[in-house]
Length: 343
Image 1 (tube, rainbow, N blue to C red):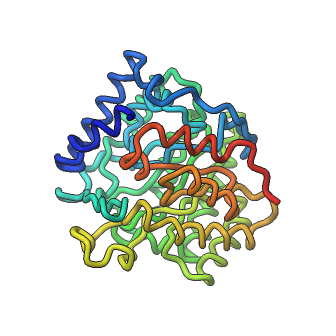
Image 2: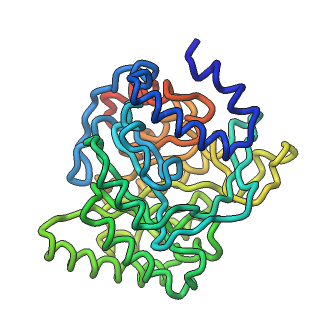
């Protein structure tokens, strides 16, 4: 029996957000002692070349677990092929009022309405600069809650400028349901305007730094066919390097009647698996051959990770599954996807 299986009942007995903070502190301590590497097992060596980058294996950590990039070195010991940290906003913000995270264990799910709580770009960038691990690192940027949606591009431009020198790739998060009106940026006209501005800024940064940094966009699972088609078209038109599908869902059919099932926020975990895969399948059909897709949502096992690749993803990210399964899930998923070849 793994140490996490023994620890989980204790963690689940306390408030989810407090358990989250305690877990991150424990990960740091276990990493420092070397015990985390033992608990996670050897990292699966299954290198993948994508986005002009090398990923040690296909399994990554999704944004949201380490919002301030304060635990990258410790998390890297869990065997991930890549790690994404954030979402960071230009200015520090506390996020939404507590309580704002809820477990739904009967559904292997979480609901959160954290609201991009983070320490801001200054602290975030300082933490990234202190890291020692060479794990491939994605930096996820968003907008402050106080920034009017009409000025959202200003926040993303600042995030891009500040993270560019330190990121292996940058993710533009326009799909959290917990920042008012954020998802309307996924609309065709809004998305085109914002990505055009970011594209112009990328060109300037590339010339100034002699460095190219891939940019991806993270989208929601709650999109109909026409919306996915419009997004795919804009991604190609604006020369965005890749897409992350998907964020959490606002749908509640899968958790109807469960305790906390009607809480506001984004639902993650097992109930999101198929809606996420639906969007991935649609994107794979709509986007040019070889266009990079990172699949995330509902991965609770190695078999789930493989379904993401079969749906059309190139890489897979985890978050909620770690809360229910612990560090062993990383290696299980990496082994299940090792050597995958799309037919």
